[in-house]
Image 1 (cartoon, rainbow, N blue to C red):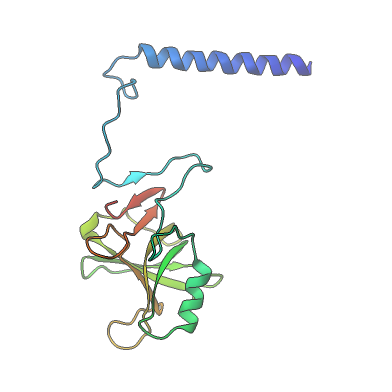
Image 2: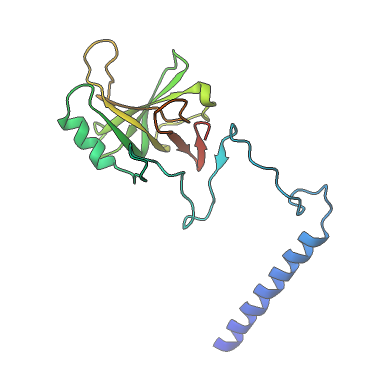
Length: 190
């Protein structure tokens, strides 16, 4: 019985694979997914990431030397707790959105929790001139790569999270490029 089931599954798989190949080969060019060569991607349009979790990855987040930087939430938390106002570094964070601030300057301001408690957060600042973000909701996962700055609540430019991550978009100067990933789509003009 066991061999029969395995043989049936193999025949079923081969049959389905053949059916898909036949349908793809014989579909009309006007039908969606009809074997047409996809148009090259427009870099100004946000690009979805592959859906296979084993191959899905954002673009490489590069440190100041051009080396790939893994998600470093713990390092960012350490910088927030131990560095003075104005300290700068390169960060690659991922976590749930904990607050969304009103947009008053053409920039999205988003608080992302990167540690165990809501106080372990960083304010991500995204320049909307590099493309609009989708509607965001609290609890949604956000990944970001960019320039970290300790920004203590001192004066009108302090961050409510005591740290910011900015330059989360394509670079137009000597900065390394950054990005934001929301729902598997990369934003920032890369």
